[in-house]
Image (tube, rainbow, N blue to C red; front, side, top):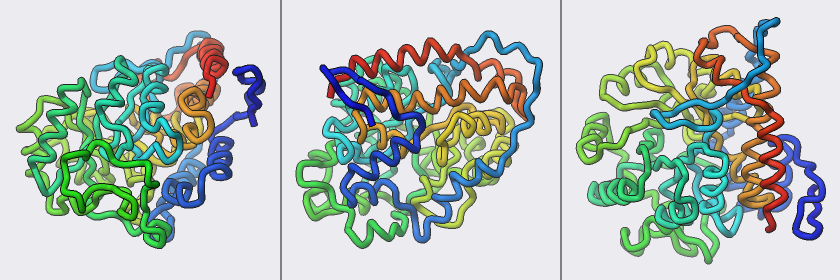
Length: 385
């Protein structure tokens, strides 16, 4: 592990995301680790999200000029440094005391997209104040109280969030066995600040209550509620939780601007397809009419490359962000996210023009690794925690 001497990083021993995962498992409390890591039921889908990438083989083309590299891409018209964003994950304050404000600063420094969770320990206002120039989308649910949902939309619009990410695969919470056994309670010093003053006392997160105010979510929502959401906002709407071509086609028909192929990290319905296995049929159904993204199981640059080659515009990572927070907060979160990026750089020359990778995607997959590595090192050395 890193040793800190005179406020500087004396040794950078964290090489890949599994190093951060191991550190987080060893240093977070068991209850916190179980909350972040658990999947639904027997965790088949959670585990298959990772294993599915190992079943995919690359078809590398050689003697292609890869001397110039550029990994920049755009999502919903905004340029980001590389095609890896941050998924909405709840309760970052359980991993690091600064919570989502540290995540926001890291995303801003890396110039990538951060999807802020409704169930953050920091409020949307605090997140924006911590990283005023950051590029953010807001993940939301439609609640029983449409007034509550509308107030969230108004808040994030006023704060400059650039899109709404509607989670559609959680009408009820998945049966996460470890969480059921432990009741998934927040530590006494944490709360879900986005709900402060917006819910009755019995629905808020307090010691002895659930991590999230689950009873607030409306399980009866249908595609007509997507139209309702469109009627109260001018922001792009991204649907998160699509796994079939039929739902992808409906999303296009209902005028949304993007899809995140997601199974909630295997935390909702066990036995569904791994997201990378569902990607191709969704890309085929969409036919480039809207942007398609993916989360779930991304751990290496090869994983990112495979998702891009199969048609994803960008990928998002969730649990690895929490591991980075558990290690050394914002500075090391930048490094843990950058680890996937640097790994992507190293794999791209080997697999240039991988089958089904479009010319547009190929031109995005490259950047000079030395420059990015130097930036990451500088951030590490300047971060004193």
